[in-house]
Image (cartoon, rainbow, N blue to C red; front, side, top):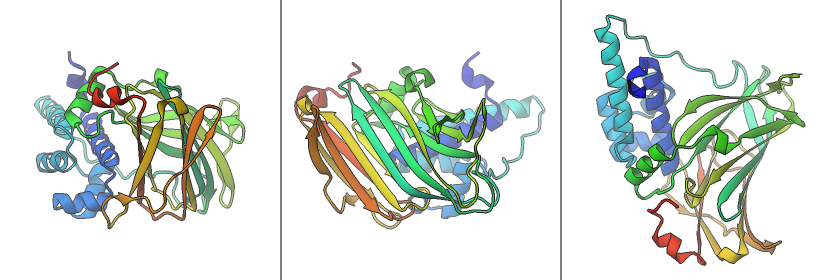
Length: 323
């Protein structure tokens, strides 16, 4: 039996929602902008992506075309429809739409006081280290924090990327995800596990105890993971999903590769435009380090840094090949 034949309606609907979130993330498109291009109300797109509305063929078709997803979203719709048909044929009732999921806890609210990302490349693998200073401005303890991992090897060619990740999917073993808080290891649980897209709950607990983020408190968390350059495209995007006071990105590449970096900014109301300031640049220990930061970025803004290695022009030409 094919693995897709064993999907339940709920699993297929969750996969559909995750596929939309992945491609919207890759394209750097806010929900409001996607809704306008598709001809839907922004709340409808939000409900569809969160799983509160059932997938429809019309939505799948429009989303796939608008996001240039190379039929990936349409395939998720077909999987959902097949699962629904199997359930109907088996005389089982189609389950109701999933209830609204509280992202953290009722009464909770997170502000990111500082968001610092560092991406290191050693010539074969990228290692991303994220450090965030979180403050609980709500009235209830926070026990988990949601993160996303999304990659796109060939952003200009979605069909090639989709085929690439079907053959070479991201795996948990290669990611080697680690997370800590106050020196304590954080457990984590997978929420969505797609070939090129993961959503993960970082939990404020481990085998030795619990350490929730209480109202009024701030705490640093850090998580890191590794991706081969055969699966990581030459871009890195930061999406502002929570109120953020300061955002910083550091890229470190070997000097021998002669790297150059540029970036764009996208907001809820504007298309991509050059970053308002150029990334800083310095060299240390054989690495060329690029740094860019901004204060109080707008909610839902996206900052995308891209690069190329001038010492590897042949690889820029052969990016369609898997090494």
